[in-house]
Image (cartoon, rainbow, N blue to C red):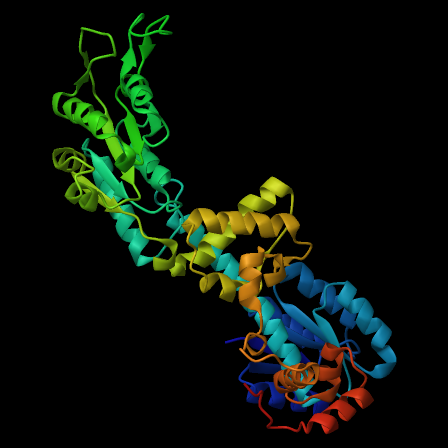
Length: 454
C-alpha cells in the first residue's frame, strides 16, 4: 500500500487532508512540524508527502531538498496558500511532483495522490522488469520468464551437454539462431566454430560446394581447394537453417554424412572425418513434407534426435513487457536516447497485437518508436502506422459515420466521467473555458451519471 505523510501546522487542514486520502485507500500519517516528520522519514520513508511550505520550525524548501537528496523516489506535493503560488511553482522546479493551492478540494487531493502513485508504480515496475531481465538471462541472448520459455531454457541446458542432432521447429523471428548459439555456447565445444548456412539461399550445385567443399579442378572455376562449411566447423556446431528447402538430391548426400560422419569434397577421393553437431531449423511442418514426398523420412529421423519447438510471441505474451524494456535499452544505446518506458496505452496495444513477425518484429517496432519519439515514454503515436490504427477509439470505428457534434458530445462525456465531473479539471484537459464547457454540457444534456453511448 502507498504510504503518505501530510505535513501541515494547520490542524484543520491536516486532519481534512488525511481523512480524504484515507477514504481513497491510502495509508496516511500526519505531522504538525518539519522536524517530527524528518525524524520519522529517516527510519520509515514515505512514498508521497503533502508538504506545506510554511512550517513553524523548518523551511519547506529545505525539507524538499532533503527529501530529494535522501529519498529520490519519494514524490512531494506542495500545499500552499494562494499568495505563495510563485514559491510552489519554484518548488516544482526543484523536484516537487506538483502543487495545490489552499483550500484543497477533495477531488484535487485524490487526483494528485493517484497521479503520484501511478508514477511510483511505473517506476517500481521498471525496476522490477530490469531485475527480471537479469534473472531471466539464464540462457545467453534470451529474455523471458514465461512458463513456455522456462521449459525451452531447461531443454537447451540439457541438450547442450549431449552431442546429438537437434531439430528446431519455429516461425521466423522466434529466435532460431539464438537457440542454436545457446546450445553451442553452453556445451563443451563453445570455443569451437559455430557455422550458419541457409539451405534455401543457394542452387543445388552451390549447396554441395558450400557444405562439402571442393578440390582444385573439380569444375570450371575451381582454381584451388576449398574447405566446406561442415569441415570448417570441426569440433563445433553447424546450423542448417530452412532445412525444408533443401533439394531431395542434397538430402540424400546430407543423410550419408550424418550416417557416416564423414564427407567427400566435390572432385575428391579421400573422405574427411567430421566431429560436429548438426542443428537443423525449419519454419515448415517437416512431417507434412515427408507425407507429401518432399522431405526424406530417414533424414527427418536422423535430424530429429531432439526437437525444440520455439513458441510464437503471442504464445508468451507475459514476456512482452520484459522484451520491450530490453529493446528500449538497446535502442537508447544505439540512438543516444533516454526513453524511460511506455505509456499504459502503448503497452495495452502491444499486448493485444498478434505479432506475425514474432520477437524480431517487436524489436523493429521498438527501434522505430525510440528513433522517432521526442517524449520520455513511448506513446501510441510513436508506433508504426499498422499499430496506430489499432488505437483508433472504438466509437470512431463503428460502421455508422458520426456527426462532428456527436463526436464532440462523446469526447466531452468521456473527459467528464474521467475527471469525476470536475469542471476545472475537465476544462483544462479540453482546453476549454468553464463558461464554454457549461454551455456545451447544457447543449448536449450532460450531467453527472451520463454514460458514453455506443
